[in-house]
Length: 282
Length: 282
Image (cartoon, rainbow over all chains, first blue to last red):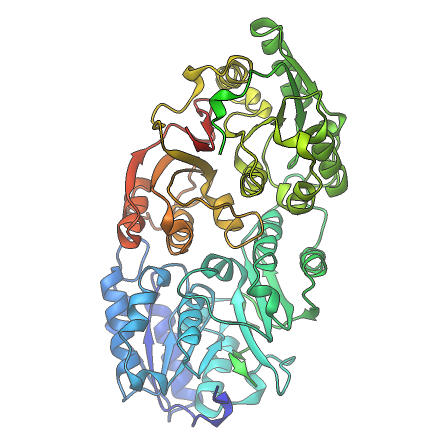
């Protein structure tokens, strides 16, 4: 496993949208912020980012082709996922199989639904993956800070962009909890043995978070992680009746039951404060 | 595997509530319907059915104890799960480990969240399990028909209560799709090799059904089923934007991609028409 810190800063970043429909306004705002803060950084939005097909940013074939094209293009040193929103699992396995050695040299940055691709790439041994803000985050309240954090990290590997609890000498990985649950047992599941696993959640009822924690902590492969840290759970719909346990109580319950160390909170989530978590040894 | 048809009709049915809070009105209606149609059938609601603890029908310990008590009690020849609603996974593994040989002789009937228990019991080799209506269904529009169907089957093994597409000589199993996805890889996952797998869904966005189908059809153990039949997907929230594919298109897509035969629709669902599917060879 190669240390993410040894990769040279990026100068040419290709953006593709593997899941839900992407916003042209977000692209425009990212271009403005990049031009002001990092004029040395070229951000190229693949035309696929602006396609629509039902729920998705283009058909499965269009999204897969754009991802494969930019990942394999040696002119890019980073691939930035435009947004999550669902859909990358529909082509991830075949697309990853179509990647060439050039694809291994670059950074991949994203989170949420893009976790399906990060997981599959990590399983395939890609060394430079990171969970962190995406262009669509520009549309959030305070979203400029999320974009600035991502750009600083892409351009300068700014340590200020990193999740503050990462431990030197330990491997980490970060996922949306629901995405992680849905890739367990599939050809996208990476080996997370001895990793500190950071999870975050959005827009799930408390009982669903509880159920997802049952699932991941009852899975033998996940029981081999070094521990779990809990990011933010945001936009939680009301539980009827009240669930009666906080998100941290839920995660502590399942960690205790499964023998997985609970290692505290993590500064990640579906929000503008979302920090960057490089995968693998830190 | 013992044929479910060889079990004598039930005369004493114990009801426990392993998940969400249960309604006293539903119990009353079930008692009325049973007294009218099957006076020979004694339906005993465990006092635990009427407990409440946050989201649940009593604490984990209370729900587990009631389930273990009635399952192990030789005076009952059936255990009927009062409702789903979430919660049985919180104690299923330990409770099943606490069952005695008496527990193997009886019928277990339920669906939805009770699928966690049916799955774990099936894995443990229990021969008389069935997916079908539960007492809480009395509160649905037309719910009397669901209760009558369950009572007819409990009292007389009425073949009119069975899902009409079950095939003699083939093993079957039925699950809520989301419940099945959340037990894959856990100690509750049964071996479904060569089974016809019937799935149904309720109150999930189309993109979530798509994602759950990715998950189950990408899991090697599920790829060994004989085929998938699709029950009803009800109360589907609006997808924004429109998902553009029907539930059947979604299931056909993932079956085709994974090489699992798609075997058509099934007459099961979260509704009063929900038919009974005995697990195992039919």
